[in-house]
Amino acid sequence: MRVVVDRQDPSAVAADLGLSINAVYLIKSRVLRRLRDEFRELLDPGSG
Image (cartoon, rainbow, N blue to C red; front, side, top):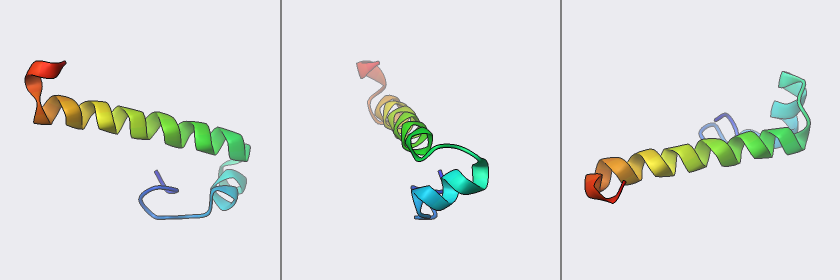
């Protein structure tokens, strides 16, 4: 979330959390997918 919401550099977040940069991008992708799915259900309850 720090990469998306706070616009922090992925390499800085990775170093801070002890993760690889690829792991940070993977987590970012998963979070964004979950948010899209949740908003889709909220905006169009009949689609899910």
